[in-house]
Image (tube, rainbow, N blue to C red; front, side, top):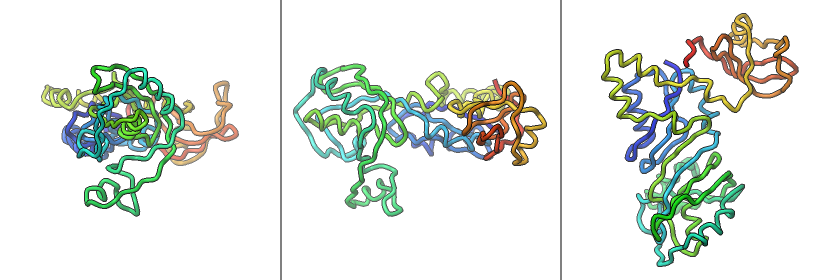
Length: 302
């Protein structure tokens, strides 16, 4: 079993628990997820089966889109609704004030991750140290926020935002820091991921839907139809098309010379396909494709 399942993770499950629930349905030999979601967050969790696990880094490094609600007036030790109250304020920013600071949180910015995060300190996870009562001091890191928009203002206490951001961005920290910049406190009360790399909302399927499919006649085959092709994770890379004989050489780890009218003129990372099947990831250099990771033969999907 090979391909990508784009799960709509429900609130209340860790990403590991969600992966476990999916594995019980599909029973793959190998599986992993690309990009952790907190238990209180819902939304897009890409899960790789089989050969797709070789492409996980390309998804993890992709841009992510989040919809989230910031509750003003309360800051918590986890920067979300799960934590203990750390500070409070009576100030509630108006819409004009909120819009004024958005540009300060767009582009390359410095961000201190939440104390309760998976970042390692001397080999230990920050959240493990924090839960043990130890003082956790994390250094600011450079992140990139491509877009940050105020979407709605349902009440004076809440504001709804949408953010498109790069790898390593903590939305919880954005909420915390926006609150402080507005002279008040803030934390994330709801968080939903809408996109990761090439995968978007329309690709998602819920656990309940998968369980219903599994109960149907020919459920295993229908579950297989829920998977997306491995190469969809590689949308940002150039495609090189090779012949069947060249595909055999690539799978044996041998470089091939790219010939003919459609031979690429670029240099750099790319992926190769033959007859609708993913063959290899590699580097194009001086008209030659050098394989770095090869993929076992599999039937094309979609």
